[in-house]
Image (cartoon, rainbow, N blue to C red):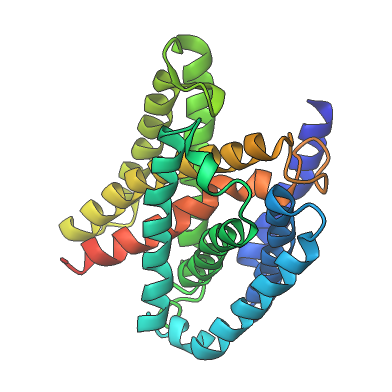
Length: 284
């Protein structure tokens, strides 16, 4: 616990500095580095002897997509058809991941020993996550360069508060296991407590920003969906680690494991928030 606290005390100010103090270009560069490290850790799940190959191949695809989706487009509030395609792939992937988790054990038989399939799964996790980071960071950039930083912090805070609420609610009232085969410690009560805490934050934010009725609905509904997705992201990484027979995705962060162990919930929450907010706020 002491090691976890020390690492967290270093990571939190670094994360805040990354979100608020860097230009969008340098923010994107560090996000790409994070993407590379996370890709390498994903490679450990299915091909422990080829983790760097996973990371390099993912990075090639990332930079190719970056070429076709220039950053100025995002800063102008434009989500191109290619970017929408990447985000919708994430929606499809997380629906598939939910099915895999519910049906475990048994669902792993068709992908456990197929490296290319697991490679594709990793791409579906990480590529939409990267672009969601940039979309949120670039939100309303032309009006105010800091709006995107606050928006990104808000979505990340939803996940952190939900995780904290789930922990304390689960410890105090948890009795019904959520999915014991995948994650023995998660309970239904913890899930409800986490969703409730995050929803309260979303309601407070809607009052603070004086948003319209449609925007308020978009924020609250998207927040709830993002929190539910964050639990799915956590469970999905737990599933892959369990099948691979490893405890942590890496050892880069003392007391916390690897990069994926810290961002697993965000990889699902961010794309789902972006997609649902865009659709609801536009009345689609």
